[in-house]
Image 1 (cartoon, rainbow, N blue to C red):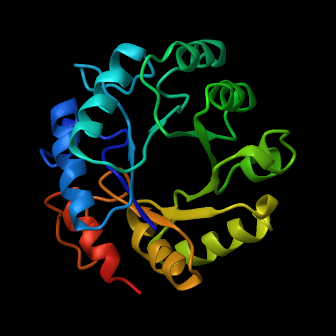
Image 2: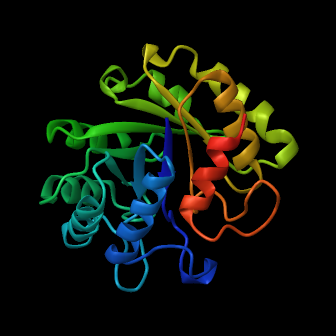
Length: 235
Protein backbone atom coordinates (compact mmCIF):
# COMPACT_ATOMS: atom_id res chain seq x y z
CA UNK A 1 0.00 0.00 0.00
CA UNK A 2 1.21 3.48 -0.85
CA UNK A 3 -0.22 6.35 1.15
CA UNK A 4 0.08 9.89 -0.17
CA UNK A 5 1.08 12.63 2.29
CA UNK A 6 -0.27 15.72 0.62
CA UNK A 7 1.35 18.69 2.35
CA UNK A 8 2.81 18.21 5.84
CA UNK A 9 4.19 21.29 7.55
CA UNK A 10 5.18 22.81 4.22
CA UNK A 11 3.82 26.18 3.18
CA UNK A 12 3.46 28.41 0.14
CA UNK A 13 7.20 29.09 0.45
CA UNK A 14 7.76 25.50 -0.77
CA UNK A 15 6.02 26.20 -4.05
CA UNK A 16 2.59 26.33 -5.62
CA UNK A 17 2.49 22.53 -5.93
CA UNK A 18 1.91 22.15 -2.18
CA UNK A 19 -1.87 22.06 -1.55
CA UNK A 20 -3.05 24.16 1.39
CA UNK A 21 -6.74 25.04 1.07
CA UNK A 22 -9.53 22.43 1.28
CA UNK A 23 -10.20 22.81 -2.44
CA UNK A 24 -6.53 22.36 -3.34
CA UNK A 25 -6.25 19.36 -1.00
CA UNK A 26 -9.27 17.74 -2.65
CA UNK A 27 -7.89 18.29 -6.14
CA UNK A 28 -4.47 16.94 -5.19
CA UNK A 29 -6.00 13.95 -3.39
CA UNK A 30 -8.13 13.01 -6.38
CA UNK A 31 -5.16 13.10 -8.75
CA UNK A 32 -2.98 11.09 -6.34
CA UNK A 33 -5.65 8.41 -5.90
CA UNK A 34 -6.08 8.23 -9.67
CA UNK A 35 -2.31 7.67 -9.88
CA UNK A 36 -2.52 4.75 -7.44
CA UNK A 37 -2.47 6.08 -3.86
CA UNK A 38 -4.58 3.92 -1.55
CA UNK A 39 -4.79 6.29 1.43
CA UNK A 40 -4.34 9.97 2.21
CA UNK A 41 -2.54 11.75 5.04
CA UNK A 42 -3.11 15.48 5.37
CA UNK A 43 -2.28 18.45 7.58
CA UNK A 44 -5.35 20.73 7.65
CA UNK A 45 -4.33 24.40 7.49
CA UNK A 46 -5.66 27.71 8.71
CA UNK A 47 -6.15 30.54 6.23
CA UNK A 48 -2.66 31.70 7.25
CA UNK A 49 -1.20 28.32 6.28
CA UNK A 50 -0.49 26.98 9.78
CA UNK A 51 -1.29 23.41 10.83
CA UNK A 52 -4.33 23.26 13.08
CA UNK A 53 -6.30 20.66 15.04
CA UNK A 54 -9.32 22.94 15.42
CA UNK A 55 -12.61 21.34 14.36
CA UNK A 56 -13.27 24.42 12.23
CA UNK A 57 -10.15 23.63 10.21
CA UNK A 58 -10.09 19.83 10.27
CA UNK A 59 -13.74 19.42 9.29
CA UNK A 60 -13.72 21.43 6.04
CA UNK A 61 -10.51 19.77 4.88
CA UNK A 62 -11.92 16.29 5.45
CA UNK A 63 -15.25 17.13 3.84
CA UNK A 64 -13.58 18.53 0.73
CA UNK A 65 -11.28 15.53 0.32
CA UNK A 66 -14.10 13.03 0.88
CA UNK A 67 -16.18 14.74 -1.78
CA UNK A 68 -13.37 13.97 -4.22
CA UNK A 69 -12.18 10.47 -3.23
CA UNK A 70 -13.42 7.29 -1.56
CA UNK A 71 -10.29 6.15 0.30
CA UNK A 72 -9.30 6.40 3.99
CA UNK A 73 -8.17 9.86 5.04
CA UNK A 74 -5.95 10.57 8.04
CA UNK A 75 -4.73 13.73 9.73
CA UNK A 76 -1.83 14.79 11.91
CA UNK A 77 -2.00 15.44 15.65
CA UNK A 78 1.56 16.76 15.79
CA UNK A 79 2.58 18.90 18.75
CA UNK A 80 3.63 21.72 16.40
CA UNK A 81 -0.09 22.18 15.58
CA UNK A 82 -0.95 22.43 19.29
CA UNK A 83 1.93 22.32 21.81
CA UNK A 84 -0.30 21.92 24.88
CA UNK A 85 -1.14 18.18 25.28
CA UNK A 86 -4.39 18.91 27.12
CA UNK A 87 -5.58 21.21 24.35
CA UNK A 88 -4.56 18.62 21.78
CA UNK A 89 -6.83 16.09 23.50
CA UNK A 90 -9.61 18.67 23.77
CA UNK A 91 -9.42 19.36 20.03
CA UNK A 92 -9.69 15.65 19.20
CA UNK A 93 -12.69 15.28 21.47
CA UNK A 94 -14.35 18.32 19.82
CA UNK A 95 -13.94 17.23 16.18
CA UNK A 96 -17.29 17.31 14.39
CA UNK A 97 -15.97 15.46 11.33
CA UNK A 98 -13.81 12.43 12.07
CA UNK A 99 -10.93 11.08 9.98
CA UNK A 100 -10.52 7.34 9.52
CA UNK A 101 -7.19 7.58 11.35
CA UNK A 102 -4.75 10.08 12.80
CA UNK A 103 -1.01 9.97 13.39
CA UNK A 104 0.28 10.33 16.95
CA UNK A 105 4.01 10.94 17.46
CA UNK A 106 5.03 8.74 20.37
CA UNK A 107 8.05 10.82 21.38
CA UNK A 108 5.80 13.81 22.06
CA UNK A 109 4.43 14.58 25.50
CA UNK A 110 0.77 13.62 25.71
CA UNK A 111 0.93 10.90 23.04
CA UNK A 112 -0.81 8.34 25.23
CA UNK A 113 -3.65 10.71 26.07
CA UNK A 114 -4.12 11.79 22.45
CA UNK A 115 -4.18 8.17 21.30
CA UNK A 116 -6.76 7.33 23.96
CA UNK A 117 -8.97 10.22 22.87
CA UNK A 118 -8.80 9.05 19.26
CA UNK A 119 -9.54 5.43 20.13
CA UNK A 120 -12.45 6.51 22.32
CA UNK A 121 -13.95 8.22 19.28
CA UNK A 122 -13.40 5.25 16.98
CA UNK A 123 -10.54 6.87 15.06
CA UNK A 124 -7.64 4.60 14.10
CA UNK A 125 -4.20 5.51 15.43
CA UNK A 126 -1.03 5.56 13.38
CA UNK A 127 1.73 5.36 15.99
CA UNK A 128 4.41 7.70 14.68
CA UNK A 129 7.79 6.37 15.78
CA UNK A 130 10.65 8.60 14.65
CA UNK A 131 14.24 7.55 14.28
CA UNK A 132 16.63 9.36 16.61
CA UNK A 133 14.04 9.66 19.39
CA UNK A 134 12.85 7.53 22.30
CA UNK A 135 9.57 6.95 20.46
CA UNK A 136 10.12 3.23 19.90
CA UNK A 137 10.89 2.58 23.56
CA UNK A 138 7.88 4.59 24.71
CA UNK A 139 5.58 2.95 22.18
CA UNK A 140 6.58 -0.59 23.04
CA UNK A 141 5.77 0.14 26.71
CA UNK A 142 2.46 1.84 25.90
CA UNK A 143 -0.88 0.40 26.96
CA UNK A 144 -2.28 1.64 23.64
CA UNK A 145 0.29 -0.21 21.52
CA UNK A 146 -1.83 -3.33 20.90
CA UNK A 147 -4.78 -1.16 19.83
CA UNK A 148 -3.17 0.95 17.09
CA UNK A 149 -4.00 0.67 13.42
CA UNK A 150 -0.31 0.46 12.51
CA UNK A 151 3.14 1.77 13.31
CA UNK A 152 4.26 4.72 11.20
CA UNK A 153 8.04 4.17 11.22
CA UNK A 154 9.52 7.52 10.25
CA UNK A 155 13.18 7.88 9.27
CA UNK A 156 14.06 11.53 9.83
CA UNK A 157 17.12 13.72 9.46
CA UNK A 158 19.30 11.34 7.45
CA UNK A 159 21.43 11.68 4.36
CA UNK A 160 20.68 9.65 1.27
CA UNK A 161 23.56 7.30 2.00
CA UNK A 162 22.62 6.71 5.63
CA UNK A 163 18.86 6.41 5.18
CA UNK A 164 18.61 2.66 4.58
CA UNK A 165 20.78 1.74 7.55
CA UNK A 166 18.79 4.15 9.74
CA UNK A 167 15.55 2.53 8.56
CA UNK A 168 16.83 -0.97 9.29
CA UNK A 169 17.96 0.14 12.75
CA UNK A 170 14.52 1.62 13.48
CA UNK A 171 12.77 -1.56 12.34
CA UNK A 172 15.09 -3.62 14.54
CA UNK A 173 14.33 -1.37 17.51
CA UNK A 174 10.61 -1.82 16.95
CA UNK A 175 10.94 -5.59 16.71
CA UNK A 176 7.59 -7.24 16.13
CA UNK A 177 5.76 -4.04 17.23
CA UNK A 178 2.98 -6.17 18.69
CA UNK A 179 2.71 -7.99 15.35
CA UNK A 180 0.83 -5.09 13.77
CA UNK A 181 1.29 -3.53 10.32
CA UNK A 182 4.21 -1.15 9.73
CA UNK A 183 4.29 1.75 7.29
CA UNK A 184 7.92 2.73 6.67
CA UNK A 185 8.92 6.04 5.10
CA UNK A 186 11.68 8.64 5.02
CA UNK A 187 11.88 12.33 4.29
CA UNK A 188 13.86 14.69 2.03
CA UNK A 189 17.20 13.08 1.09
CA UNK A 190 16.15 9.81 2.71
CA UNK A 191 12.68 9.58 1.19
CA UNK A 192 13.46 7.56 -1.91
CA UNK A 193 16.03 5.15 -0.39
CA UNK A 194 13.63 4.32 2.45
CA UNK A 195 10.70 3.91 0.08
CA UNK A 196 12.71 1.48 -2.03
CA UNK A 197 13.61 -0.50 1.09
CA UNK A 198 9.97 -0.62 2.19
CA UNK A 199 8.96 -1.93 -1.21
CA UNK A 200 11.65 -4.62 -1.11
CA UNK A 201 10.57 -5.67 2.39
CA UNK A 202 6.91 -5.76 1.43
CA UNK A 203 5.96 -3.02 3.89
CA UNK A 204 3.43 -0.27 3.41
CA UNK A 205 5.00 3.08 2.60
CA UNK A 206 4.13 6.63 1.67
CA UNK A 207 5.22 9.47 -0.55
CA UNK A 208 4.09 13.01 -1.18
CA UNK A 209 5.09 16.63 -0.94
CA UNK A 210 5.19 16.40 2.85
CA UNK A 211 8.13 14.02 2.61
CA UNK A 212 9.97 15.14 -0.51
CA UNK A 213 9.80 17.81 -3.19
CA UNK A 214 12.01 16.01 -5.71
CA UNK A 215 11.54 13.01 -7.97
CA UNK A 216 14.11 10.18 -7.85
CA UNK A 217 16.03 11.76 -10.74
CA UNK A 218 16.31 15.08 -8.88
CA UNK A 219 13.70 16.98 -10.85
CA UNK A 220 11.19 19.08 -8.94
CA UNK A 221 7.87 17.23 -8.61
CA UNK A 222 4.94 19.01 -10.24
CA UNK A 223 2.36 17.44 -7.92
CA UNK A 224 1.63 14.64 -5.48
CA UNK A 225 0.30 12.42 -8.27
CA UNK A 226 3.68 12.53 -10.04
CA UNK A 227 5.39 11.39 -6.82
CA UNK A 228 2.90 8.51 -6.44
CA UNK A 229 3.54 7.41 -10.02
CA UNK A 230 7.29 7.44 -9.40
CA UNK A 231 6.87 5.52 -6.15
CA UNK A 232 4.88 2.76 -7.83
CA UNK A 233 7.70 2.39 -10.36
CA UNK A 234 10.34 1.96 -7.63
CA UNK A 235 11.63 -1.45 -6.60
